Image (cartoon, rainbow over all chains, first blue to last red; front, side, top):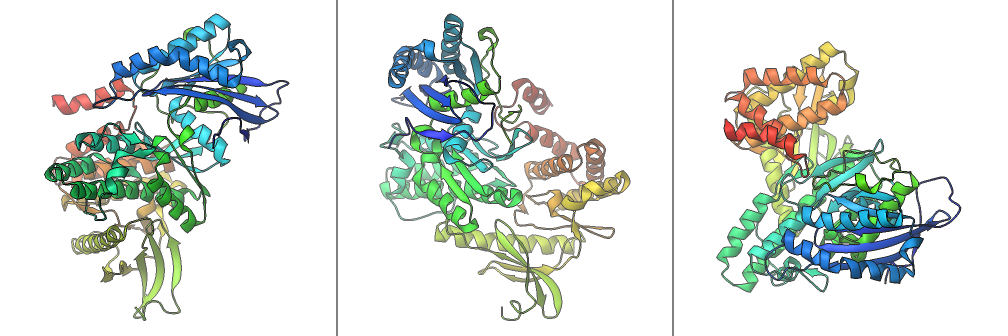
Length: 358
Length: 229
C-alpha cells in the first residue's frame, strides 16, 4: 500500500494560508538520489510524489565517487519522474528544499547544485534541510506522535532523542559506528553481501535464519550511549573461524543481531523511564527491520505506550521527507537565497533550534 | 523468598531494568532490587544477562564496602532469580535536590563525588552510570548507589566515561555554576586517584567530542594532544 496521495493533519499550528503550497525536496546525502513533492492546504499535508534511484555497489561498500556519478546520471530523470507523478510543472512549485547534511560530500553536492540551479533559474525560494531532522519529522507526521521518544537508526546514525525547548536533545547515541553500518560491515566482511538487501530483507537477517543457536558476544551500553565496534570485531573474528559452515555463520549473525538490537532496546527503555514520554517512534533505514520492530512492539506493550515504526517507503532515504521538512521551514519563513546554501557534511541535529518543536 | 515478599513490601521505583522494593528483611529495613525478565530478549541472553549483572553488582558493592567507600551494604544475593537485597539508605537523590543547595554545599558534594570516583577507580572499578540520579544524600553523607552497569577494568576509558557522565549531569542540574562545581570535583579526583589523573581528564575531554558529526576543527584540537604527547 502506497503512502502517495495520503493526507496527514499537520500537527503544528501556523497562520492559515489562502492557497496550496507545494514544496519539492531533493535528497542526495548517501546512496539514494530522491525527489519528493508535498502539498499543503487547509491544515493538511498531502504526498504528491516520491521518486528515487539508488546506487547499489556491485562489490564493497558505498564509494563516494561512484555514488556521486550515479546521482549525476540519474538526477534529471528522477526529477522529471517526480514532477510527472505529481502532475505538476516546476513553475507550480513554491519552494525547493534540499538536504545539506550530514552526508557524503560529493553526493551532497549533486543535490545542492540542482537545488541552487532550480531556485535561481525559476526564482523559487530555497530551504536547507538537515537530513536527520527530516527522517524524524516525517515519522512524527505519519505516526501522529507529537512528543515521542525518538529512535533514529540508519547506516549513518544511531540516536535516542527527545524534544525539549525547541531543540532535539540527544539522550544517547553511538560512540563509534552506527547500527546500520555494523550490519552492513559485518555482512560485507563475512562475505554475505553485497547485495545488502534482498526483497526488503537484510543479508544479516537472511543469514540469521540458517541457525537456531546463540553465542555470547560483547554487549556495550554506557549509560544511554552505545558502542558497536567491539561487537563487530568479536563477531567477525568468530565468523572467520566458521570457514564456510553455513549453520555456524548463521549462529554468529543471529547472535550479532540479537545483541545489537537488545542494546538499542535497553537504552530506549531507559530513556522512556527517564523522560516519561508516552510513545516510541522508530525512524531511519533500519526502522524497516521486522525483528527490531518486533522487539520494540514488546516493550511498547510492556510499558503501555504507543509505538510506530516508519514504513519502508519513507524509512530509508527519500525526497519526500526533505520536501515535508522543507515545507515546515517554509511555513515558518526559514527560507534562503540560493547563493547562501552550502552543504555541511557534519551537521548535527542538536545544534539548532527548530521553531515548530515543543 | 517468603520472608521477603511479605506485607511490608512497598514498590519504590520501577526502572528500565529492575523493580526496586522496600522490604522487611528479617526485621531489617532493606531495599530489594529484582531484575525483570524481558520478553524481547532471546531466553538464553535473558538468563545470562540477569545472572551476570546481578552477580557483578553484588560483588562490586561488597568490594567497595569493604574498602571503606560509602555504599549500601549487601545483605542477600540470588543470582538465578536476579534478586539483590541491600541496606536501605533513607536519603534524597542528588538529582532532585542538588540544584536547590547553596554554592558552598553543592561544592562540597561535588568534591565528595570526585573523591568517591577516584577511590573507586583506584580499585579498578567503574560505575557505568555515574550521574546525580545515582547519588544519595543523607545528612552529611554522600552515598553512591545503583551499580547495575558497573564493572572491573583497568582501562582509563571506563573511568573517563564515569567522569564524563557526571560532568554532563552537573551541567544539566546547575548550568550557571557548573564550572566551579566541576573544577571542585576534578581537583578532588586528582588528589585521590592512584594513577596519573591527567590521563583520565584528557580522555574525558576526548570523549565529549567523540559523537558523530562533531565539527572537525574542534575535534582535531582536542585529539591532537593525545597523538603528539
